[in-house]
Length: 373
Image 1 (cartoon, rainbow, N blue to C red):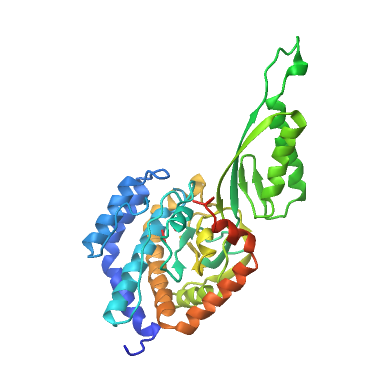
Image 2: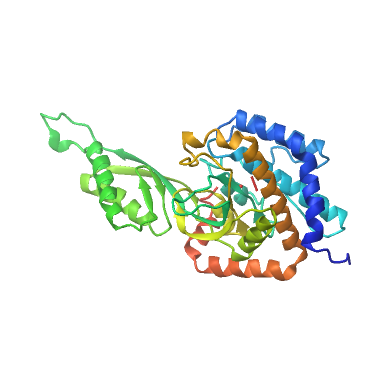
C-alpha cells in the first residue's frame, strides 16, 4: 500500500504541473475563444484539444462519441484540461491507485451533449464529475464573490408544436375550416395564463421552456387543450430534458476550502436559482457532481449569453482564473480518490438527494434523453 499523502503535500506539485502548461494551454484557450463553432460542428476545437493532449503524452480516443461564446467554454476546457493533467501527474508521482478521465462534450448549449454521453455509457466507470464554469463577480445582484460552489440552475424542456388545420374559403364555407392559427394563438394564451400560477424561479419562453419536472405536463396540457378547442391536430415534438443540478454539499465544502488556499472568497451555495440551464444537471443525477461558477472579473452588469460578456472569457485575467480552478479541481479529485470517507459522504448525499427526486431520475434512465467539458 502506498503511504498516505495529504492534500497539502500534493498542492505544490499539482500547481507546478499547471504552471508549466500555462503557455501551451494559453494558446489552446485563445484558439477556442477566437474560433467558436456551433453544436455538433466542433471539428477544429476537437482536433486542437486532442493534439494538445497527445503531445503531452496522453492516450486520446478521437471522435469517441462526437466531441465537442459569450459563455466562456474556452475556460471550461482550459480548467478541465489543467485539472486532468495535474491530477493524473500527482497520482502517478505518489503511486496512488485511481483513474482519471477527461470527456469532451459537444453541443452543451443546444443539443444535450452530456445527455447523449450518458446514454452512450461515457460515465459508467466514473464515481464523481468535476467541472467549472466562468461567470461575473456579481452573478446575483445581492451577492458579490469570487464564485459559487453550489449553483442552482433551472431544468429545461423544449417543445416544438405543429398545429394542423383544414383550409376553407373564409367567406363561402368557413364552417368547414379548422383554424390552425387560432390553435396556435390559443395555446400561447393558455401558457400566458399559466404564467400567473408558476413558481417565482420557473420560466416559460414561448417555444423554449426552462422547467422543473412538474411544470412540463401543465404546459403540455395548455397545448393539447388548444388543439381540442379548435378541432385541430397537434404534433408535439419534445427535445431532451436538461435536468436541474443536485448540489453536493461535500464537494462544495472542498471547493470552498481549497479556493481559500488560493486567496479566493467563494460562497459555498446560494438559495436562488440562476435563470439558465446546463446539461451537467443530467450528470448530477447519475453521480456526485460539482459545477461551480467562478468569477473572471467581467465588467459590471455583464452576464453569460449576453454581448457584454463576450470579450471577458478571452482576457488573460479570465485564463489565469481558469488555471486556478483547474488546480483546485485536481485537489478535489485527489481528496475523492484518497479519502474513502469523503467519497462515501458525497455518494450518500447524492443518493439522498436523487431519491427525493425520482421523477427526473426516471427520465434520465429512459431512452428519451440523448460537460467534464
